[in-house]
Image (cartoon, rainbow, N blue to C red; front, side, top):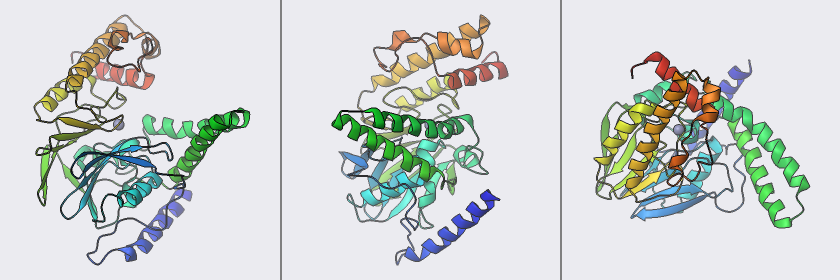
Amino acid sequence: MRLTLVTVLCALLGAASWWRGGPDGTVAAQSPVPAGTGHTGSAFRFNKVREGVYHAVGTGALTVVGNSAVIVNDDDVMIVDDHVSPAAAHVLLEEVKQLSPKPIRHVINTHFHFDHAHGNQVFGRGVDIIGHEFTRQMLTDNRSVGMPLFQNYLKGLPDAIADLRTRVAAEKDPAAKAKLSTQLTSAENNLASQKEFRPVPPNITLKTEMTLHSGSREIQIRFLGRAHTAGDVVVFLPREKVVITGAFFTAALSNMSDGYVDEWVETLENLKKLDFEVVLPGHGEAFTDRNKIDYFQAYLRDVWAEVGRLKREGASAEEASKRADLTKHRDHFPGIQGPGLPLIGVQRIYAMMDAAPRR
Ligand SMILES: [Zn+2]
């Protein structure tokens, strides 16, 4: 019953918003303002990497989780990925107005995960959402919403809020208390926004590649192979030599729960064929070091080998997740503190090895 009411409510709110469309029919954002947008100061830092090309990174004032990219073209604006919630996407749209008054016409989802595509609902009918066919499948009929990655995230939010409340109450140092209070408000707002979330799939899909020519800007959208999911795309600007990589290739390590860890290495080989100088990752800061592809490939190869070794020894996925030792990659990935891999990723690798033992 509740779901039905929410659906009806969303439909009514959506219908009520179209009148805000501009004279050309473009609708920048739904009204009214989503729950949970409250924050102090800027929610995003827009790092300019080329003329009209920005990497949008959260400041911590609002929970946004992933990064987005903003491409300002001659007549319009394009957004790549739209964060973790309708609130985060709404605030992104508000702050993008500082960069350009031009209308947003396209949003690209690099993949279906919640931290990259759960702002889709704030874009109106004048905005096309582009993604891989697989991304559309996963965001249709709530398929992605029921998966462990998102469910674990949602289930963890109330505990995280309770923990922050306790810490705010106990903190004596005023500066530390203020910082924790910001985190608490941000977490509470995120939870409020999650309650309004509904999946919206891309309305334009691709299987291998697509090129948009917007004024003088050429924007290539490429599927390079299965990797972090079965439908990651990168956005490549050949003139500017910039590639936007979502969670397929980041500044650090990526979640493997929906990944194809063995194929990922080959897919990264295809990334090397693109002539880029700057990477705008979906997590972490922009970087220029192409050697990071090699480092990540070496890590993935060792993950596959190490987890496979433990599996052959008879270790359960739980044991393997504690024992898998990737510490030799610590120099390139300082996040590695000691042996161990996230269980959700190890379970995925076990399932794939069981499905195709000779992969
Ligand atoms: Zn992801």
